[in-house]
Length: 349
Ligand code: AMP
Ligand code: MG
Image (tube, rainbow, N blue to C red; front, side, top):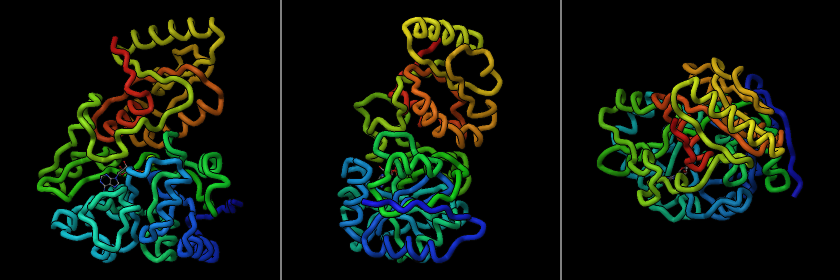
């Protein structure tokens, strides 16, 4: 398949381009597009065959459901039933934005989109390109992150091209994603709202908006016996090609330990990399030191983390060590992604 790659400016959106992309989706094709979280791989959410194509293009297991993207709050009632009051409150606070809510699904949503579940995940993105495209495509775009399954989510179009050229009809290049981490997912289909995936909208923000919110137990634990409720969270994910381990402990000890390890691996002829905060990055002697941001600037770290995992691959780094980051607030989502990328390999000093 030929993939058309076009650049599009979110401050001056080329309408003809959006129409072309919208027609592709209406006709059952696939278009990758920018959102404020990460790039999405979009198809018509109400068309079974489109969802099938998304799974095939990503190489994604078909029990891992897709998020349906809408552009108008009023469209929610067409695809979800039993929408609780809490959803309206959350939508008022965080839509459009990086929050996904899960409801019981309406009959029009095919099981191919929900991975066989009776629930549907819905998000209203804020990126103007995404919103225009959703409207032009008929209102409901199923879109997982636009990476090959298992790879880090793409925050720039060039990584979508790398993973999906030849597998999708069109890629809209709208520049770098602002947030850089996937949406927070909250399940509203049960008695108590449950966070199934941490993200930029933090537990504290959700509690402030609706009061009672719980964190899915399967998320906090690396124990494989406790299954996460979001099917996607059980897969190894976000992983760079090199081996990655997280090192936590007192600052000086972490630096000394990582440098020692790096020395050993370099002697064996391996290419080494480190992911470190701005404050400590200069202390490492690896072939490649990547700094996502200052330790207390979580938004910056979130924005750069996936790009850095991709760049370490681009540079052929075989052994990677990462400092641990603070796990509070947005840091909870950062550590969740880093832990999954590392396959939960953590060295505690
Ligand atoms: P991605 O689109 O790559 O961000 O992945 C979507 C995430 O949403 C995956 O972790 C899915 O398992 C999760 N998800 C989507 N729909 C549902 C649902 N109905 N119930 C639980 N998790 C869901
Ligand atoms: Mg994904």
